Length: 131
Length: 133
Image 1: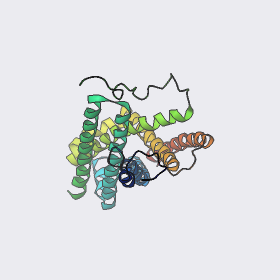
Image 2 (image 1 turned 120 degrees about the vertical axis):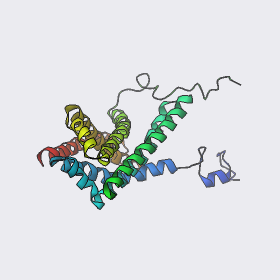
Image 3 (image 1 turned 60 degrees about the horizontal axis):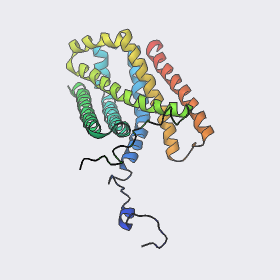
Image 4 (image 1 turned 180 degrees about the horizontal axis):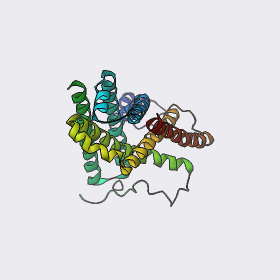
């Protein structure tokens, strides 16, 4: 035991550095890593859709665009990263502004909805690209 | 035991607004980051719906497309573009803070102005590409 330490945590818990929630800085870190990945991905998405919209942008034009392997891969990466970042961010908002049973309900609803949107969006891209 | 512990009767954020905090430009940007973040979560669901309509085939896609081209669709899309550009620019500002850069008040206020200006320029650029490109 350190003689001068005022830290009430045990040396083991301090060495593990996982805190009360038991996951340490994981949430903080993955929110930032996904943010970094989303800088090029979201700029690519917005300007690609803008380019697409400048043309005819009917069913066949959009289908042709999504079918290109590079576009399909980028779309899957964008959707997966955006929804992962989103579920982490919305979780932070829910934890800050709600309490009691509402908090658990909102947390579960947010996670299920994000999973549904991610699965549906990615499946749609794969179906168009591979179909 | 059903007595209320102090932990349960704590005030819930943002209780301090108005009562204790004066208005600050930087806090407005901070709310903006959260509001655009939640808005983008909903917007991403609409992006997924657009892709599902595409996967469902030409008939479904042509049924959805008029809503995107209608005035309300375009307003929503414009709001989504700006929300994304704002959240992107302000997110980069947050990443700089995370590594300990630009955290003094003057720089934080100035970078806040830059975020708003750059997000508007990027939004205008995307819509110029779509309409004039």
